[in-house]
Structure formats: structure tokens, C-alpha cells
Length: 101
Image (cartoon, rainbow, N blue to C red; front, top):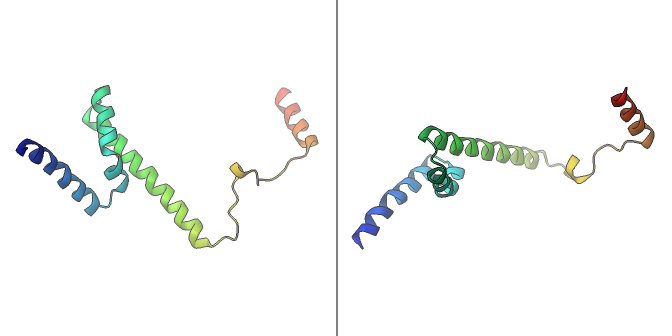
């Protein structure tokens, strides 16, 4: 029982540090990434790089979401939704001809 307590203590401390440093992606995914790193025998540098890339992407996504929310757009349209500009068939035909020439 004391062995479990000793092993749990560093993880609790790590999670407290990650929360204090405001690294939510790392706090949520560190177990998964460390497990994958152990199986694939990653170097320490690759492990750290993977966690920091995930944190950076998470922050970029959150910043984009925050900016969209602050802009107060009535409707959010993206190209993925199919709300992008429509092209006529004639335009598509001309584009395809340019690629073949």
C-alpha cells in the first residue's frame, strides 16, 4: 500500500505543477503520450517535443475560438460547411483546361 502511495505522489505533484503553469494539453494527455513514447522508445527530446507541439496547437485553436467569439459574428461560416464561394460549371471547365494545357 505504501508503494502505491509513493508512486501516486509524484503524479499528483506533476499535475499540480502543470495546472499552476497553465499547460492544459500536457496535463490531459501526458499519460497517453508517455505510454506511446515508452512503446516506441522515443528519446526524451522527442517526448518533450510532442507534448509541446500538442500544447502549442491547443493554444492556437483556443485563440482562434476566442477571437471568433469576441468578434460576435451573427453566423460563423467556414469552407468546410459548404458556405464558401460558388463556382459556375463554366469556371470549373476553364480551370480544368488550364491544368491540361
